[in-house]
Length: 219
Length: 219
Image (cartoon, rainbow over the protein chains, first blue to last red):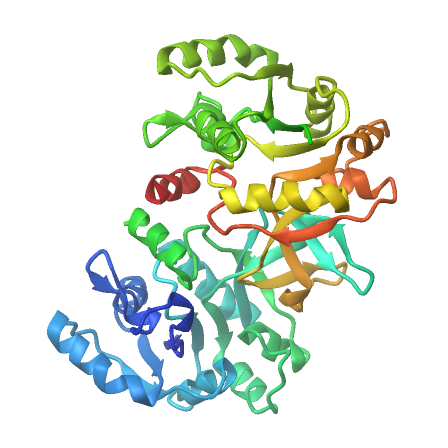
């Protein structure tokens, strides 16, 4: 079954406080985004990789590929106004039947087991996302203040979120709403159930300087 | 105003997979617990520190103190069956009026700002906990499956949780229920509102080998 992955790297990196968008920052001497793409290539060397990047960053990315000798074949789609629009642009480059994953460009530490598990389960379930337990106590903000809620009823969602291509394409024909925080929420809004599989704890999203320290430690 | 802190170190460390309970594992060459206690001493050198440890670990702890030359003055209380019982045992060593914090022994990276903020706010609010934003998408498990919930309505709870001594003592006279996952939930069950203040992202709870890697990176 043909497999695709859309790597979403729309981040402008403002939260890092630096000039360089976070997906380009080097971790262990190599830009985050290259490590992320390599994880999918290691899973399946025939997977079709689509990288979604803001137009303004594409020239810089190509320079980076040259200077790092990064030869992994991939297509590039234009980043959109929100994550939803970015994914939709990436999806336009996916053709035929099969499975398509959507993965955050700044999650280089996804394990091979998690990638394989998501794609394998998606063959039958058509919509699969990796989740992990919440370690901390969770509080829910209410009109009156806040309340403790039982944390075993909550999960934190990671990527790759993997879908049947037709299902995801149909879901992305919907009009955008702010409730679309990830691909699963888009698919659910079309009435399709989402299957949860175990993620890996190291599969963190690198969004702050703190995360970069953690990333260096993981290598 | 007199300040106390109860450092709870009841962990048997099973999740670490090793023989040594996690609170004793060295981070940057020093047991986690010593780093945690030093954070409170650095905040206020007159703070009364109460360490809650399982009886079976107390002799080992004293040996560790000797071998590391750890001279920070503290009382020791016996660990109980659950966190609730451990905190209650620690509270028995707190006398008079003032403020008492309860802190996880395996959170050595709490910032000075967070400690100071919690105690300062507790003077008036009487029940204060530090919280941080959820970075990931949050899913809520339901009878039917699961659903995405808006993550800006959820916060992750850290420690120290700081209280007016009388209020916390009264709350801990309640009978234990499994809903008591932290001290805030015990106080709320008595009908007292809890005030949220910002935590610090580095203030992670060291519970798995992954966290230890992160801890080494933070030093």
